[in-house]
Image: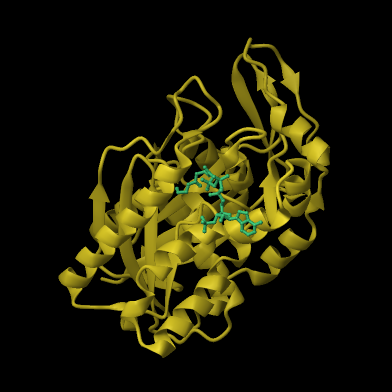
Length: 390
Ligand code: COA
């Protein structure tokens, strides 16, 4: 049975910071951020957006009534979840008005969560071919003001419908995954900001890619020349390039050029959004599909997922006929063009805003947020969401 990505949606908040201006304020040469790290703009979540609303807004763009009935499993990958107990999937299930005869869960393993979700979805569809699974990757990446990780923050979500006979990408069965216990990045439950050993995380990312790639080749007999493109988890756009460069020598000159060009295209959205942890790999896939206009049906696309701590996986998909008809390129180009730039001091203020932790009632002004689904406030330690379309 063919199983894979039938629909893919994306949402990022309406605010962003220009990396050149952030660099000037931090006394760093702008080229360090724009070339050395490879980021132009960084999405910023206002207090009215959290990982639940970002994911719900991403899903809103792709779901129709038939999906709402057929989806019987919601898998929410995140590492910036809002509750240690209740899953973000349950909130989204309600906000989107999905069939109540469904499962809704949250999956955590750093930036790998949505990939775990996709693989679980694949198994679920194999057992229940009529059903559809909504897989969400949604995060707000926070390292803190004036930290080395600051330039690699971001906010946004990708939503995917996984089904049999998908319209966009059929996921192939062979995949290679690898786990080792390392402390390259973590976030204790008492902290709203990540702790990171940046150099170690860079090294481990490359090392995990090398391990799963070598194993993939020996398991499948396939090699670099069999790929139209490889999409990477992108904590920042230079990271995937470093990994790609380690294998480019394995291809012919034509393949090297193709993979390098397609890599650049696959980073275009990420370069303007920043790190969105669980959703970064899928935002890269979306960039490639939406910004490249001549990918042939049947092309094989590689996907490298890495979640610090750490789990890595290399898996692949085959592009389906007329996949372009099932994308939302116009929505995304207006999403980007309607965003508002904030100054660095506005960003710092928004970054430090917090919700009450004493159970008090707190109302937020959702009129300043153009998103359909927003966090409207808190009362009795409960988050109150609003879907303006309902
Ligand atoms: N022009 C062009 N490039 C410049 C530059 C300039 N003026 N100044 C510096 N650079 C380059 C550096 O050479 C380096 O490139 P390289 O990695 O290819 O050698 C890059 O910019 C980053 O500089 P570096 O000094 O390594 O940055 P840093 O130590 O301040 O922080 C990270 C970089 C990624 C470690 C940091 O942002 C971080 O910890 N991020 C969070 C963790 C993360 O994203 N990990 C990824 C794996 S999951």
